[in-house]
Image 1 (cartoon, rainbow, N blue to C red):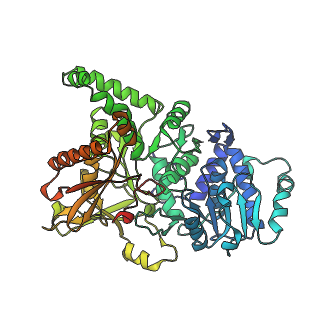
Image 2: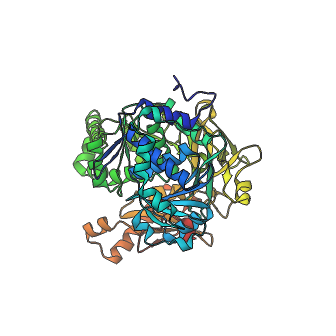
Image 3: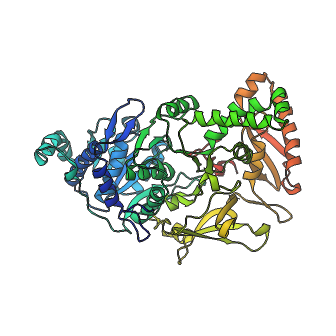
Length: 560
């Protein structure tokens, strides 16, 4: 049954949040994991009301840009929701961007106000942002810089003004927001750029409504459910399903606010016991390699796993241990943001771990496809969202029917901000979006997506075969002493760049020569697993981790 504010006829997103804040006024909304301080929905709405007064004093109007740059925390969320419910366009910037890139985004977006963490502001200046009129601290909520002293004085007297406006205190009856047009731009979300160029994706209120209402109607979150937010909220994936969906239904969001190291994450999972886990493949793959692989590769364990019935008991124990590691009370783990290693996926499916893999991109805010874990088809990226997204494959009939995945529907962006050339390249006139991913459609109703790799990374062999380096890398990454790899084309030869796992090398006390020999053995073993045209001619060791985007995708353009 659909939520009363999320129907097939559409959704007034602002009204959805207005009603959610009213209905859940006394319930916990946001908790900061580090400080353990909690805001109720009423207290969050009160902060939003104060921010609306600030927006008015700053002369902001619907459509004006507000930039948001800092780590996840309750104030970050309040600023985002205040912009969404006021009608200004929020520009969330990943705090992992270097200062120069962040500055370029602030200026390119035409932001008039910047909310920023103090530690980041130390590397910026108002003089370098000519269109910004005020800079506000996400830590103290004070004015850090402005042109003139108007807003500094206003902020100092904001509490007095607020109390005068609400003499009987701020109540649920005071929550009232103006609806925004479906096609109004709610967010400009700058991509993290594996190709080296960051583009401003314009997402409308209707784009967000498509994602939010799907999450609400699918009961990914519900009133009173618990969410642990550890992905960047400035990225579309975390933004939609760790913030926008839970806050639309009265769920309780705990914000980690720190780098999600395995130890910290396991501690937080045990305390919060989330009802849904949203994560990227890197987290599951690390747990698999560190916790599971050493266990199942020991000789006694290999013998036990070869015995029918005994293997079931062992796999059941491994599953229970994994479930408890994620808090023990979740319905499923949704993996997105990057491909999941096939070996890890196969093992998790074999032990019946409740996980599913979805597919999306910033340009769809982000969701394109998803399937509940009980219906998930291994090797797929979920099913096109019914009634929301459609898909097709651009193929010439070769390569087994694989081709570029095209999508169209409610979630597809309005275009790239101030970049008509890139918009024209990505969007067809009839609304079809070029995803840049190669794959095919299959499964029930031919609506399940199977991804091979990125169109831009695909390598054409000398005999015309399409080579997807991601598939080769997935096999190589499971081999001894390999932390991560990148397969590149060197004058018609495939070469694998490898960053060796420093912990594994140290534990075995390998010399440089022994590590080189181990990699040569990996190359031989790899070539037995791939097609003749996918043979790797050499493995080259690199001295450090590959440069990555803020969402931990390798910046391939730097290694061509």
